[in-house]
Image (spheres, rainbow, N blue to C red):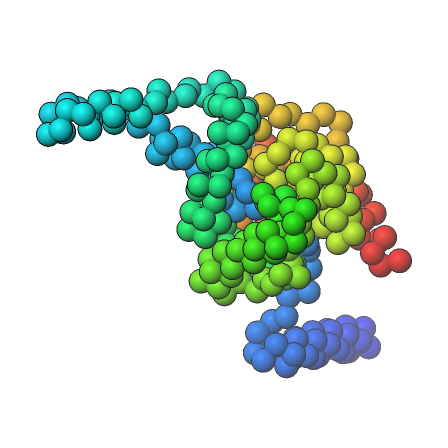
Length: 304
């Protein structure tokens, strides 16, 4: 009899303790359960938040029409000859594993610079993000995550302060325009700028400083360094990175097709209790799963 009384009392105590804890969470959140899960996501911009290759191909298509002008379209034969002379042969992709105009299409670097300047306004202000990009980052915040953007966008590290500031203001306005549509909380303080030739090193360093859980990037050099020194990496597959295969890396690598799959990784990660092994359930990612002890070691360092 005494045993059953003790057992009943223990169960009652546990129930009261749980109800008190839930009540505390509800009180703090105004009726919504406070998420205790916290993780840090660092996302690249060019090629990740948007589709860089698609934009480059669009520029080439726009600059080099594939069809010659028809003589019948011109009443003035001289105008037809002038237009025909202006018609240039469209360059072909000579190096699909590159994403710069000059390297990808084999055009002169001066031509690349001219095209950059000509289409910079469209790219900076109008070109839309990938489908689901900001929705996924918003969901990451809702799941308890912190989101940072790490970018080596052109001109944002220019030696001239006026050009540098214009480029940064333009990018931050782009983030605000498309991010605010999804109620995502991102400010200029959440954006880190780097020089292109040092982006891999600096991204890895910042990921360590922020104790990031994920870096989302598309450049093989950046991916490789982060996998060795920083955190798990998610890569949206492109022509210029699909050849990359990590070997003997410290952290996990996930190759995805779109932001919807990235969102699923975040969902599984949070609901799986920060256990990387739970991410192996995502069939459409190529995950290199390391033992859970790596994540536990990282969490222990934070606590200490």
